[in-house]
Length: 102
Image 1: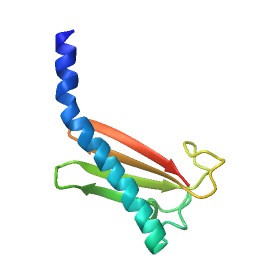
Image 2: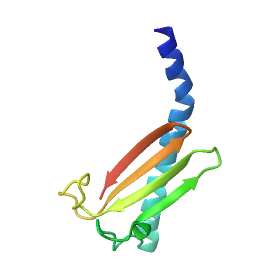
Image 3: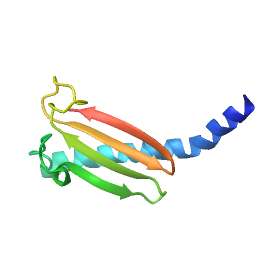
Image 4: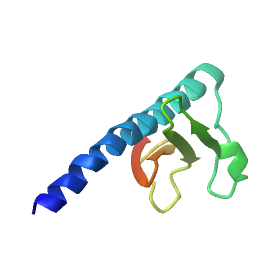
């Protein structure tokens, strides 16, 4: 039991930066949508480069990647009117994802 607790305690140092990186990806995407009108033409069949933010590395070594899709994609709720955004934060071997719909 103690070994399992040590592994969890060790991973918290990667878990929190990965969550913050995923959040930064969401915030950047929302800013780009609201400020610049980006990602308006993203569809499930559109060119991926136009509908994602490539891997971005932050100062603390964590990174994020964002994918923007229309509501017809399988993990995007059909009741959504605009887009689904998935941001995946990463640090080392730890990944955490956040999703928003709007």
